[in-house]
Length: 191
Image (cartoon, rainbow, N blue to C red; front, side, top):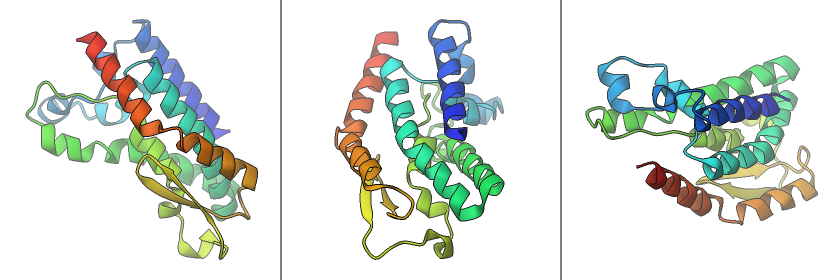
């Protein structure tokens, strides 16, 4: 349920930016503004703004397929309420942490900016990195799925084979390549 709420919030804000109701330029990650103008909020708000319909669609599809499973896993591993809280903390923290390198690298570059929830979606997809080893309960035979550049190991006790096969099929459709094309095309159209 939390994943669906994250998707709804992200879609709402992105669509409001696409239509001009919200000013995307005030929400996107602009390293120069964060560093020199102390607009720290941008390290979070960029995660709900996307570069175009394709960028939004690919990120939200990935979050839909992986996020719901991760959310369920966190609830099973840590308990209902604590699992949900930790899942949201993982998602929000990943949005912020995924900009740190760009902030350091591009803090003096007025032309650099970024949008999208890819960092948070990647972190959600690689959920085992946040789970303690004792709660992983990995069986001897587990399925491995590649999302973005993260490897995700899914215990068959939590995820059914049909879900694993659907996720593998989705990831095999070259998510990273397709989203990169859409993002670059969207930026090119705006400039």
